[in-house]
Amino acid sequence: MYVTPEQIQAATKANVEALLAVANAQFSAFEKLANISAGAVKSAFEDSIANTRALLGAKDVQEFVSLQNTLAQPAIEKAISYSKSVYEVATEANGELSKVAERRVAEWNENFVSLLDKVSKNAPAGSDVAVAAVKSMLAAANSAYDNFTKVAKQATEIAEANMTAATAAVTKDGKKKAA
Image 1 (cartoon, rainbow, N blue to C red):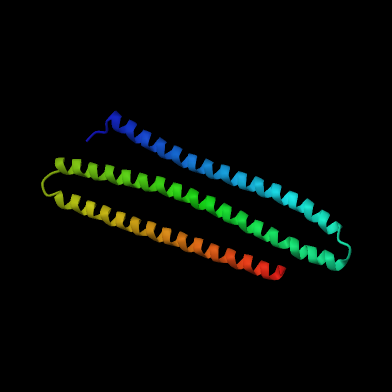
Image 2 (image 1 turned 180 degrees about the vertical axis):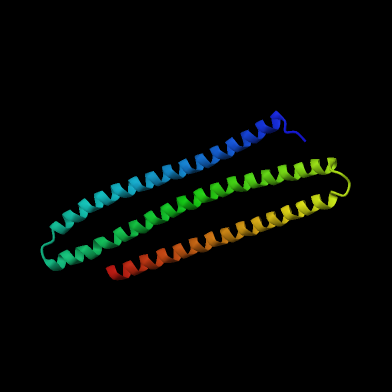
């Protein structure tokens, strides 16, 4: 069984397309993170100027301490918002990369099964058992991969729920302290 130039070209094209999809997902995530970070730095700088001016305008120590407590809550909320935004970008990028990987695995499995079918047609008598065993192992590997993917998705959902709960707890705690 020989590999034709068309098969090599198709495989190369599929690999380049997968590589470009990964690069595009990573660049998109990097761009989003850069925008989020730039916005956070700008906001923090503006807030620090405003907070410094407000603190310098305090007439006594008690007003100064009161202002500090009042100014801390928005900073905590912004930090939480920043963390959530970064987490969302990371989750989105992970989802995109997972889709690319799943497509490549599906293509590989399809090509491998096709190759097995071609080999089994030209194989000597009695090799049907070996081909069936290889197909069975491939099916078991695919099943394990599917289970792993499901577990990873469940772990991501649990992490998202925990992050949401932690965010709510920190925000609620900060509001109680500010009041």
